[in-house]
Length: 239
Ligand SMILES: [Fe+2]
Image (tube, rainbow, N blue to C red):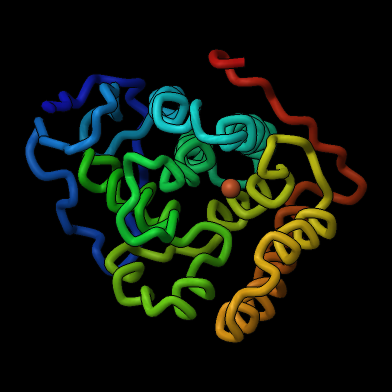
């Protein structure tokens, strides 16, 4: 199936940071993919649209358990905390929140590790390298990838860290897998319960990941200010 890259809001994806800054992951203007899904994707390489990201996430995840509800809330939270990142990165944050879990879509299953499967797919579609890197490395995926021997493949994409990556952790960790607002402690508890019984390497990865997640959320809370109650901003479509 042919997928044509469609024009979208001309919001630049600034500062293609990371080790592959100048690498072209977009390929040609038109690309071939194996998925059955017919999608509208981002604008020209280097530009990103939060709404185009939501449209693609909806297409891929609307039939996957409650992942779409989780995604929708994460994207709405991203809108509400966007002021914690530089202005030129706010649309990038919303798009990353919208797309961070697309690797759960059955059509994208390759490695079985959703941050990597999602990033591979987005790279093939020509999404900007910073966005692909944020999806690949979202919420401390590195720790889990190490346990599965997938770090090298994950490191094909830049791990930029910083305010946008922190905000993405916040969006992910304050939404339950079925799309309810939740505090970090409860979310971590739920994650532990979901992965109970995993091999030792995975348990160790979770132990390393938890301090990372707590520190990321704490930095976002500090940027928001003390006692700040954040309400998700509903997305324009797919409510
Ligand atoms: Fe998530």
